[in-house]
Image (cartoon, rainbow, N blue to C red; front, side, top):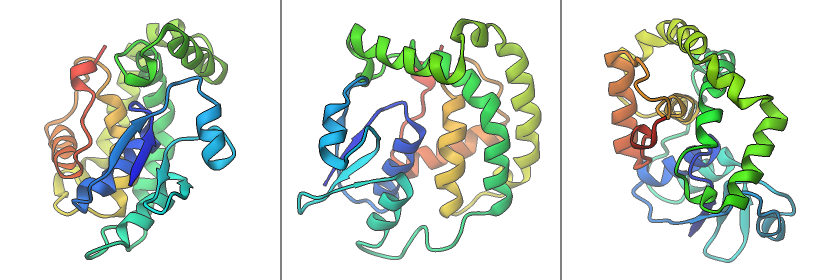
Amino acid sequence: MKLHIYQHCPFCNRARMIFGFKNQPVELSVIMEGDVETPTRMVGKKVVPILEKDDGTYMPESMDIVHYVDGLQGDRVAAEPADEAIVEWSKQASGAIYKLAIPRFTRADFAELATPEARAAYTQREIAAFGNLEELQAQSEAFIAETVEKLAEIEPYLQSFSKVSTTEFILFPVLNSLSIVKDFPFSPACLAYLQKVSALSKVPLFIEKAL
């Protein structure tokens, strides 16, 4: 199987996680930002991630990919619904988190941004969605303070984490986006959670790319 992704994309990271959890081999293929033709040819629209199955058919939508791969072999990792409190927290916290992450994603070293044209296409897409990225970056201190306060709400979950479940597919990609923020003040429990899930899922953190 082949998984077509952007390296920075939280939804792509969600789809990647299941392959690590299940020790299922997969070939990763990066689609360049600004490339509309490739995903449209596969699934009829510009989206990622896209799973290319062994039979040559294509599947979009990250959780659909998770459930498909989860059912191929062994006990299911994502059999039960995600923790509703964590799902709601992720919705509430993601605003400030992505306002921190997006300006940095547009400047970071990702394969899908390897050409000036690709980086420009991505930057313009995020400007359309988030507004002036330089102004957002300038507000980092306020967004960091807001996010640290929100993270305190899930500290009990992070401290007690011991087993991967469906909840990790919701929470980890959001928290991992914070690792693009250089020297973000993660609590010991939050950093331990990120490191453990990253190791189990084989999805790298962005700390080495942090800005």
